[in-house]
Image 1 (tube, helix red, strand yellow):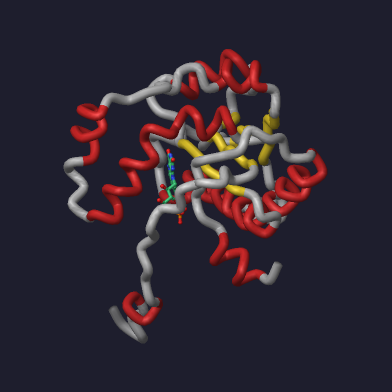
Image 2 (tube, rainbow, N blue to C red):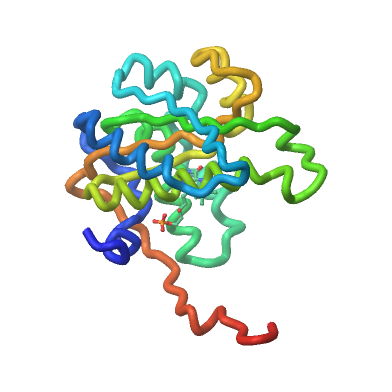
Length: 206
Ligand SMILES: Cc1cc2nc3c(=O)[nH]c(=O)nc-3n(C[C@H](O)[C@H](O)[C@H](O)COP(=O)(O)O)c2cc1C
């Protein structure tokens, strides 16, 4: 698949077939991630990969399985942009299932030497930024493989809980859960904001 086709194809899809993805494909996707730029030239990224539903259900145990209409309405009513609101209305109730049902769950980790939540300067966030370059490469690679992808940022005490389950080293941080799999036949692809580059370019001066 051509690069721009993969860029166009990459969309967050949260409805998966309950079907495993073969490990060679997952390795190609991870290898694409591991080619991303990194601030310190070290690509200090590690990945926990699992297709085992028992392991997955343990990892995602803290994520609410359901949300009431009332709560969803309360959360989403402050978003005035209809396109954005519709996306959240679709996304929020799917957080658990999108990670459970996908063929593969990947937990990426990056090495963080200083406190991520109390950065002293913008450069204290370089490892975090580099990790997201890696994740985007993986998203694009998954799109090129015609697979669907979704991710979730750990909320509340989810990351702490996962640390107990996975036992990852203290100087690593998990920025998100990442699910990769085959899209369900009726998978929702939310309307995306179409932004023309001409609207955002400021030639020579803002
Ligand atoms: C930093 C970041 C955090 C996100 N967190 C979540 C999340 O917790 N759960 C989720 O379902 N999607 C999450 N998303 C996906 C966005 O909702 C999605 O990228 C956005 O709606 C644009 O849609 P697209 O990816 O299909 O282009 C996140 C995306 C980014 C870049």
